[in-house]
Image (cartoon, rainbow, N blue to C red):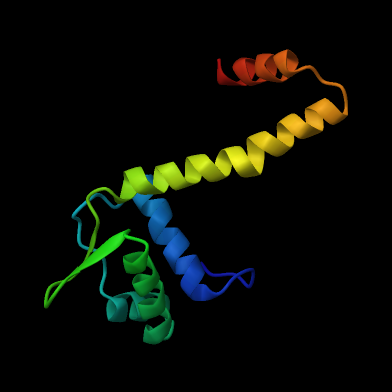
Amino acid sequence: MFDDRSPIYRQIADRIKADVLSQTLKGDEQVMSTNRYAAFYRINPATAAKAFQQLVDEGVLYKKRGIGMFVSPHARDALRAVRRKSFFADVVDPMVADAKAIGIPLSEVIGRIEELEG
């Protein structure tokens, strides 16, 4: 499950975010405890705790004292908004700049996108 491209705690956080976006995890749904997560994936509990704390700090998860961690009710909407913003900045803007640089009219780019969508 984990690779060497980024720290394990970040990969855990990214996996949970992906599960929220895909609705594998839904708002107010309880997630595995950090200890259970660590045991299941055979990682240090502190690493799992760091990932979960990052998700709490970002508002993706919230804690219910004595019960556990849960997906924030609006986490999916917030994650989609962040991803949408980065999609335009990381994908669309450079694509448009590249198209302009090599002389592809924007109408042709849009036409291609519409072909792929249909």
